[in-house]
Length: 183
Length: 271
Image (cartoon, rainbow over all chains, first blue to last red; front, side, top):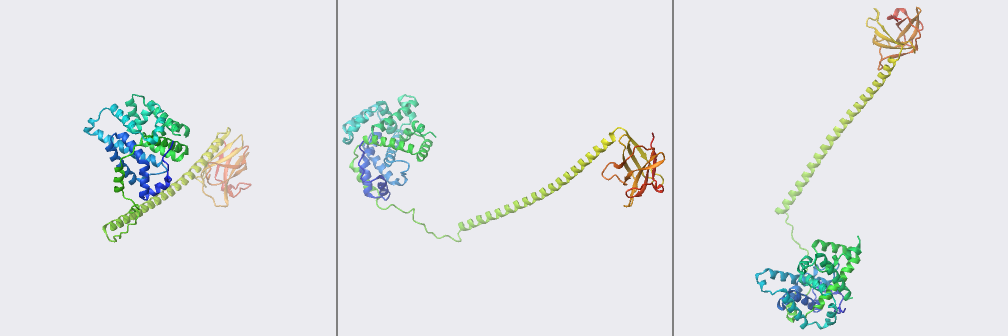
């Protein structure tokens, strides 16, 4: 798997970031904004909202850099979690409002989403996309539900009409498979 | 802790997916800081998810970056928090006074409490000493009672022996109150006396018991005016035969011949 080529090591980058270095921020943004935007878009399914969220997310990252603890995990994972949580929160907040009734049923959105994704594939990852398609559909579906929609295991089990144990086993299997695929 | 089993349990996968409770999250983070294997597995799983997220990369609109570069503040981080705050202490302000009063009250309370504890300690020490004295007295008394008991038992054993004769001697006109009992065992030939009331003698005098055999007095031993702590005084002579018993006052240690002028009591043995 080809990861974005690192210009500077993560520790140096973090140090420069905490000094509020503009160069470091630009590097961080250029490096990771497509991934974060993709994830957010995938969750909220709305270009405009996703762009607003992306901006909020980078402000959040910028302001909370001090809270990042390298001993607890990787920087990109930390950023991804901020992005995911912000997007899922915003999605849930919107759902509780009455206007949420406008939303069409899930299946339609999935179809639209799939079309959207096929229209604009990220050229850098075409090969990998194929690799990921090797994931068993039921496993991929679970990862997407839990990771991109913020479903708890219980909610996923209910939605897919599966026993909770099966959901847990499948998530484990899916991640292990993913791990192997990117080796 | 079985690390392999923990890794295989699926909790780490749930953790990187963000689908764990707060408690589980803390547990995983704690364990990952202890066990490098767990940390490594988490990193690998996180990397797999990172890669998965990268697959969904979409170039964001350029306007976002422009807005961010305008919105964010660059340059040296604000160090307001680190700057020492220098402020004059109000030396006679209410806060200062209150603090002083509170501190003084606490000190006073502590002092009073110490005095209270000290007095308690003294009381306890006194009680302890009193209890000890009482205990010693009781122990002494008990020892005495035990001694008495053993003496009584010995006496009783003596009196129970078969062949014991009891001869009561009554004082004559020289000693009207001089009553005593002679215990004579005709089988073991032992003699003991129980003095009831004989006048005290000077230090160089002792009472002497005589057994009369065929009209002749035979020395049966000396004894004192009181039995002391013993119930009976056992005499150190043996008496094989006796028709009567007599008591005279002799010089300490006894005399080979009775001084008849000092004869106090005479009593025949009723055969």
